[in-house]
Image 1 (tube, helix red, strand yellow):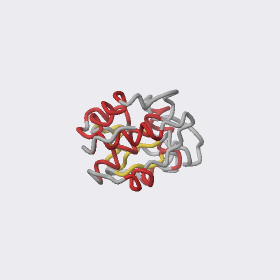
Image 2: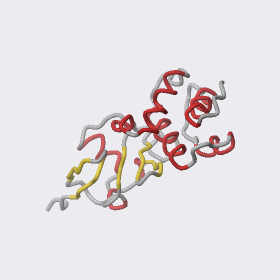
Image 3: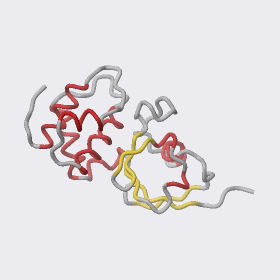
Image 4: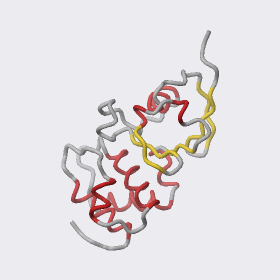
Length: 157
């Protein structure tokens, strides 16, 4: 007997899945719903490539079971430009040429957007504390500069 259908609110649209309650959200997003902007990285909630926002807070979807997100608002990278802060983050990312290989960038953008939605003018220390996603290309200075620009401080890398 299969799992009972679960409703999820993702990017302001209701989706149904019959995945088990303990299935990681990442697999439902990518495999069931075919939203492939959210990436699989380490599978251990360490790298941040799988980051999404749940009720405005950044979370690692690779270790977040479905039963923890039912009834919550899930936002993926596919909808980030529909968010005013997210749109400004993406524009700053392009301006500061943040992406190099680009694999971690959807998670980085999600983390930066969540940070700026919760703290409009973060300090360098707050940015460092929030931006714990791993970037093998080392674009952390450009990431910080882009976040400062969105925050209005205009600092440059």
